[in-house]
Image: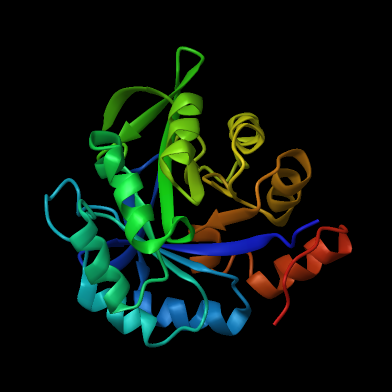
Length: 252
């Protein structure tokens, strides 16, 4: 079995790390550069940076902050938010990102996924999917979870793979920030449907939640924010726990 990845997420607004519940009620979680340094020291496998208000504010990602973080870390670094073109992506990769995450821009212009894969390689292209259950159907949302789209989540995930995505970052809006556990059903459906890695996101509250998502789905990574930011689940202890549960994780 491939080793599972533990991935902290920095949701950035106005240059600060923030965290909310169900994409609402944001509160400050600290300095992103300091948090990034901490996660490298603790043994995080990758780091995700999402400029969560870039799309709504119709501006570019904070490339200077990306550069500051990239200079401080030596683990794979994914950046998303406000990336609407190959040129935008090139700016972020030049600033130090290893991978680009696209969400709203990819739904609006699916060809962007193919264009990014052609320019940088599929391994650099992460399609982030914000999914929410509406009348028992999982639907894709964009613009920071504000806008429902016509896409059903399963169909969009498969299309993203066909267009050249190298990875899917799947966030359950229903579970986000609740600390009630990952959305196992949709995560399993997506991870079985596609042949690219799927990162589970939304709902982590305790170490057992990571065990569940790795045992009950084919997710290759699990992403969390507040439980890492506020020290509720330290990454070294989480990895030790998963190892004891016979779930393979990476050690430095």
